[in-house]
Image 1 (cartoon, rainbow, N blue to C red):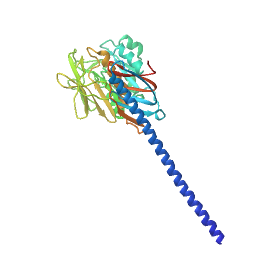
Image 2: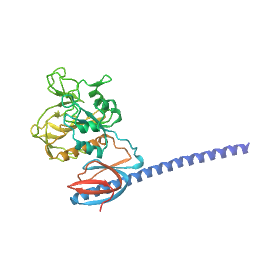
Image 3: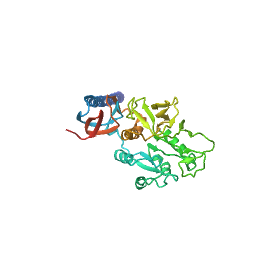
Image 4: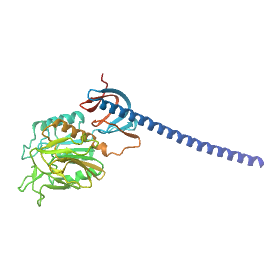
Length: 370
C-alpha cells in the first residue's frame, strides 16, 4: 500500500511539474511575440523617420535636388505632411475599386480621361443628354460604354466614386430606389464620394424629358437640393468666380492662399458637419469642402474647370480621387504614421525609389536616378 501511495504522489508531482512547464512555456511564447511586435514597431518607426527625413531634405534643398533609397515596406504618402509605413505581408491587395463618371454637360475632357487612365485606371461610366448631343463627344462614346444606370447597378464593386457634372434626375431610380438614396447608403457604409459641379439636374420651370440635364421637380426649390444631409446650391456663371484655399488637408494637394478662377459659383452650405478647404472671394461661401456621411465621406468641388492652371487643378482632382478612400480608412495597428515637411501628392510605393524636387514639389518614382 505504501508503494501504491508513493506511485500516486510521484505521478502527482510529475503532473505539477508539467503544468508549471506549460505555464512557463506559454509565458515565454507570449514574451517572444511581444518582443517581435516591439521590434517590428521600432523597425517600422525607424524606417518612417528615415524616409520622412529624406523627403524633407530633398524639399528643403530646392528644385533639382534628388535622392535614391530602398525600402522593404509599403510606403504611403498621404499628402504634404503625413506618411504611413506598413509591412508588405500585412497588405491584402485589392483590385481597382474606383469608378469615374464622365459627362458631356461640362464637358469632361479627353486630357482628364487620359491622365486618370494612366495614373489610376478606373472603371469609366458616362452620362449624355438629349438636349446637348445625346451621343456625347466622340472620345467619350468611343472609350466608354457604361452609363449612370450601370454605375448604380454595380455600385457595390467600388469604394471610391467620382461624379463629374452628373446632373442626376431627382426622380431617377432603379429597383424602386432613388439614385441619390443608393449613393447615400453606399457612402454610409464607409466609402468615398467625390462630387464636382452640378450633381443634380438643373431646375427650370419648363417641361423636360427624363433624358435632359434640366428638370422641373414638384414645387420650386430654386435649384437648391437637400442631398446627403447637406444643402447644395447649384448656380451658373462664366468665370470671374475667384476662390482661395483657406485650409490645408491631406489628400487635397492645395496650399493656403492658392487661388483659382471657377467658371461657376455653386456651393454647399457650411454647417458644423462640413470642413471647408476653399472659399469664394466675393461671398465667402464654400467652394471646396467635405463632410462625413455615416461611416464614409463626401467631397465637393464646385467646379472642375478653371480659367487658368487647368492642368494643375486637374492634378488636384486626380490626387483626391486617388487618396479619398485611404483617408477614411482607420489606421491598423500594423501601420506606422509619421510626419514630414514637404509638398508631395499621394503615393503608394515600395522597393527601389527615387525622390526629386520638381518646382518645389517632391515627386517619388520606382527606380533610381543619377
